[in-house]
Length: 232
Image (tube, rainbow, N blue to C red; front, side, top):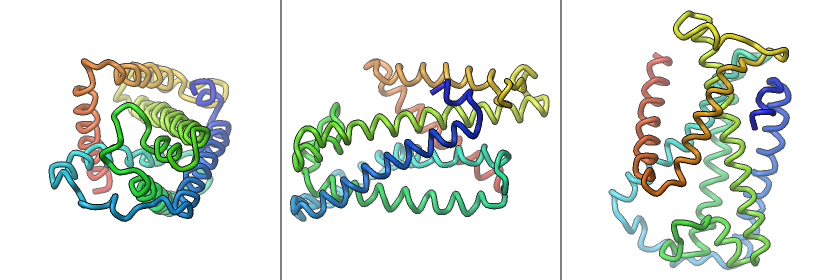
């Protein structure tokens, strides 16, 4: 991930595009094949919201944080040939994500009841295994790893550009404005990569699970507040 990010914006764009297209292809195939399999059971959708409003709010906190990922695109607007196209890019990105993931999750919940999902295994992989066998589950699990890699690229790419802009304005040390031969702010990128790895591995520590969830929700709130302030 770090090697791709340090290779420049064009290499990062191509690698990221390849992985996203492959990820979307797997999720579309899962949704269509799962729906046509006849294994989607309407009774799995009742009762609707079995944990009530508290369950919805608990899911909303992490869900909003997850869907804030496309906001990292905003930090790349200065590198676009036509920065004015960014609003259109953001709009269609959110539309595609909402349609794809809502559809995939509806199929997933229709195939396997929510009571059968555990904490450890991937729910999409479990649903695919139930309908199409273990190999399909491994393919969907591979898609989950692709999603994690694309997220990590975004989490490394975005902060490095933000730190670069802040260094140019004198808000943070000037070292963050240093560029490599490919015009990449490499200092900020390495710092962001190390921090990202710390939190990724921290998520696997049982004692830090609650802290990690709370941190994610706080980041979601602060990120939303920052975006709203910048828009105003």
